[in-house]
Image 1 (cartoon, rainbow, N blue to C red):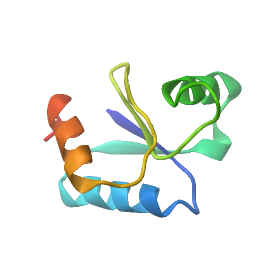
Image 2: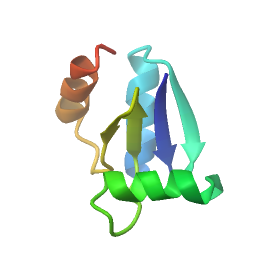
Image 3: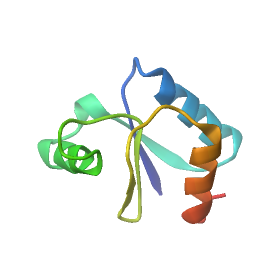
Length: 84
């Protein structure tokens, strides 16, 4: 299942999750502030190793770094993963 690491105050996270719901993409929403250190480290590494950025997504070991919501880019990435 697609994992979405989000932060409560992140508008891009809200838009991304709204897009996923609208397109019937099942996902698990994971609050970044409640993740154990080993998971946080993976999120940091997926974002270049400096800090965590949200919304970061993971699907079957493949990571999508956190970024400003861009519907076309998210749609493209989900298609590459076979989720759309």
